[in-house]
Length: 287
Image (cartoon, rainbow, N blue to C red; front, side):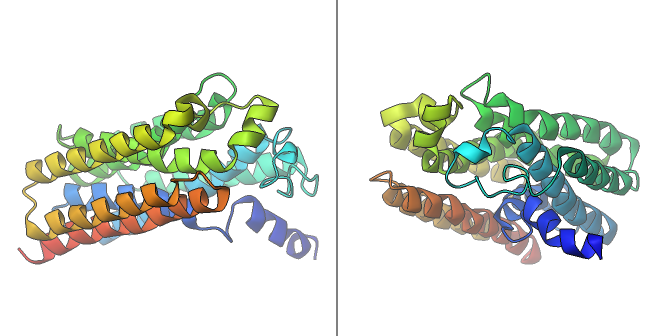
């Protein structure tokens, strides 16, 4: 009965009701998996990486809320989170995070040695990211590395080697993460300034629209270069053109820097990730 009563709090802690973070982690992981396997990933790796995405994103939410447990109460959007509001205890949250991380590691053990070694770096990135906002204005870069690390891990699992072209895809995913997480940070910018939390939204200041637009351009260039390395054709090119249209729409949404519209621009990146994946999958299917 006690577990049943606390289950809704655990689900809120891991953002089960807000799967956008899971999808933003899933898409670059699937990009890497499809490129590494030339469109035919093994069923085992597909299941392992898909389940791993959910588990690690959930563990990352726990780590983030634990790191921010004394901050979230001062931010309008986060003050009712289970840890910030005192509905869950710190030890209880840490125990849940440990279980999730261990379950994810158990999945990685079903792959190969190189993937296992890369998973240790993934854990460091996921655990360290929430603390970056205290010391640097670039926590979004840390998030980007953590959310993109599934790409080299996918290549390791499918090929047992890290092919050089994967890094074009990796850096494209990192920059993409910086863009959408900057939109997310723009929602909280005023609160963050008041409590001393750092972000790229604060670093970029009035140049936020220009910088994010330039980063979006670089994302498209890197994805195009990666596509050339992997022999992508027309479906992939059309997907990138559609992605460019989505980026233009996002820039339109943030033009007045209104909180609600910045959040909509952030959410719209789910469609971008899906569109790129659809381009990759379709390109391989039509060969």
